[in-house]
Amino acid sequence: MLEFVKFSGDDNRTTLEHVEQFLLQCGEASYSDALKLRMFPLPLFGTAFTWFSSLAPNSIFSWAQLEQRFHEYFYTGDNELRLSHLTAIKQKFNEPVSDYIKRFRDTRNRCFNLTISDKDLADLAYAGLSSHIKDKLDNHGFADVSQVLLRALAMESRALDSRNFSKSNDTNKNDRPAVNILEYSSYESNNEEADVCVAKLNWNAKPKPFVCSVLKPVSQKNPQD
Image 1 (spheres, helix red, strand yellow):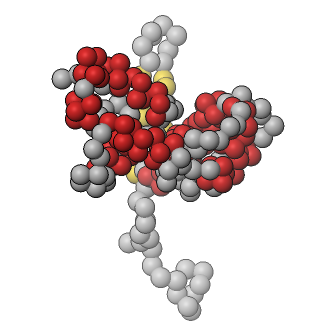
Image 2 (cartoon, helix red, strand yellow):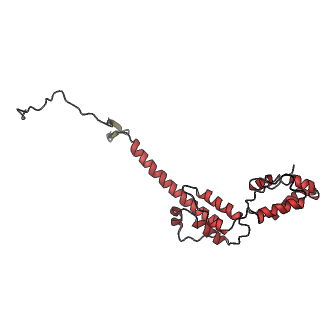
Image 3 (cartoon, helix red, strand yellow):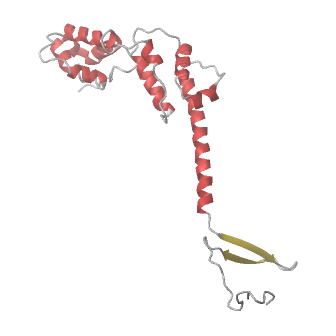
């Protein structure tokens, strides 16, 4: 079995590049249309394999027909997206930055006929970030989407560390035992080892009132007593 380079339909490679690479990897089998038809689905996965599986039975009779259908669907067919789809991609509430950028790139890869510079693409990716991250990245120029990803990940990590630190402090306050430790060190100048006396005072969370048996209730007649 040949080891083909996989094609999902969502990557940066065009259908023309994939077909050319597929034929090169077929070697001598590329001279046989029957073999090419049989091996064509092997490198497909994801969206591409779903498309191939959806073809009606007995609807393909030649390699030329299959190649044409393949190009039509992934280049100008129903799978093609436009700039409006790209600008609609926004980071969801509590969505990690990496997941948002992945959705953004997947959408860009389906905008086959869209011509846009790396800087303009980075500006679109920046515009779709959540406001709490975007505001901290204000006035930063981005050369490409990868730069947006790296700086946004740094901001996301700082925010996460800050939240974890606040939660840790709150937990420590709530779980702090009602124990006070008093330390007293007693040593002489000639003694190298110091004796440390430690006393633990355990305070109940809800202390009960202590009543001394010697004391008596105050007499209403003789308050002086």
